[in-house]
Image 1 (spheres, rainbow over the protein chains, first blue to last red):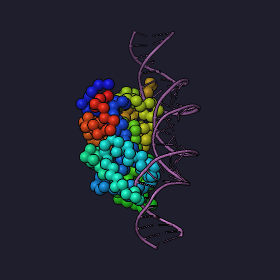
Image 2 (image 1 turned 45 degrees about the horizontal axis):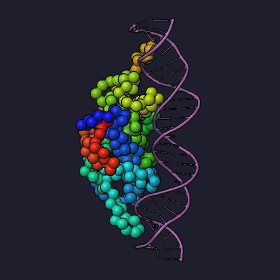
Image 3 (image 1 turned 135 degrees about the vertical axis):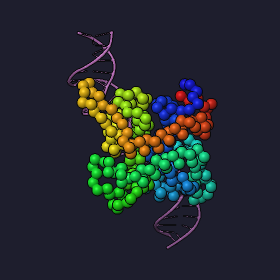
Image 4 (image 1 turned 90 degrees about the vertical axis):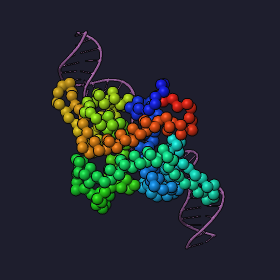
Length: 124
Length: 124
DNA sequence: AGGCATACTTACATATATGTGGGTACTTAC
DNA sequence: GTAAGTACCCACATATATGTAAGTATGCCT
C-alpha cells in the first residue's frame, strides 16, 4: 500500500478501478447521464431508464451516493418524496460518460455497419 | 422497430445500449484503454491489465472485435502470434473511455475524500 | 532433455448481478 | 371506497459473469 498522487486503473487493487466500475456499470452510467441536466425523483429515474427494476435503481443510487457522486434529498414527507442531484464530482464524471454514450448514439448507423451480422441497419 | 438516425441508450432494445455495455464492461474499457496508443499481443494485454484471466481477455477481445472496434491480426505462426489494434471507431471510443478513466485517476484523492469511510487517503 | 512461453479453448465451479413478487403508510384522484 | 402513486426493503430464484485448471503444438533457451 503506497500513497499515490493519482490512481491507476490497470492496478487491480487501486480504488480508481472500482469507481470506474461503478460509473460504467450497467445502470450506473445511465443514472449519471439521466441526472446530467436535471434533478430527478426516484420514480422519474425509473421511467426514464427503460428496463431498470426498482431494486437495481435503488441499489445503484446507493452506490453512487456512497461514492459521493450524487446527492440524495429526502423531504421526509408521506407519501415519500426524495430526489437526486449530481455533486460537482458527479457532474464531471457524468459529462464524460455522456460524451461516450453521445458519440455512440450519433454514430450508431456506422457502428452497426461494422457488425458482421449487418442486416440493413434497423435501429430500435 | 423503427429506423432512427441516431441511437438512444435509454431505450432498452436499442443496440447503442449494448455497445455501451461492451465498451464499459469490467474488462472491455481497460482493453480499449490499453490499446489506445499501441498494438499489443495477447500476452502483453494480459500482463498490462492486472487481474484479468486468459478466459476473460479472450472473450472480451472477441466481443470488441465483433463490434468492429478492434482488429485481430493472426500471423499464422507456431507458437501462435496474434496482435490487436484499434479500428478507427475503436480509437474514437477508446479516447472517450480514456478521458473518463483519466479524470478519475487524476482526481482520486479528492474522490476518496468524498467517501464516508474516508480514512486518510491511502491509494494502492 | 526440461522448462517456459505463446494464444487460445473447454469443462466445471463459484461469485455476482439482476429480476420478481409482496409489503409499507399514506395521499390523491376517480 | 377503490385504485394508483410514492420510495423504498426483503426474501427468493435465476441469469450472467468470472475464475480455475488442464490441454494443444511448437519454438527457444539452458
